[in-house]
Length: 147
Image (cartoon, rainbow, N blue to C red):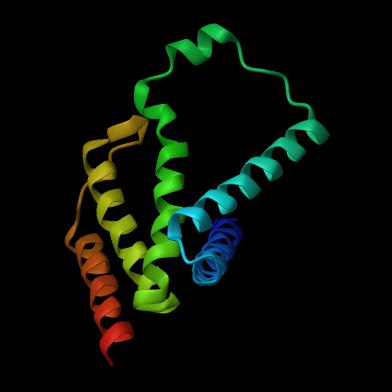
């Protein structure tokens, strides 16, 4: 079953590459990474609102929302930074180098989150193999960008 999840995650990665490229193109047409990010996020809000209206999920209890740690609420601002970075950096790096660098950053940060069990994640120690995997991704960034 893990292969299904990996394929779905790879599909999400493909969406990320298309999104960054679309935002980069929008940036060039609007002459502003900020406006490109703004309109992309508006599309996200409209999509989320539409899904909520169609599915009508049960709202969470107010006490549950108030009891969530502060870092549970940073997904939106982090998403905005990701969208803005795609609009601003993909035209400078190219889609492949941008996405490779993003994946490298994701892996490096994830390794730390896993190792220390931060943000309610189960602890998974940094091993030489996992560290090598991150280093190989960064080597890939260099190869994609400069060769």
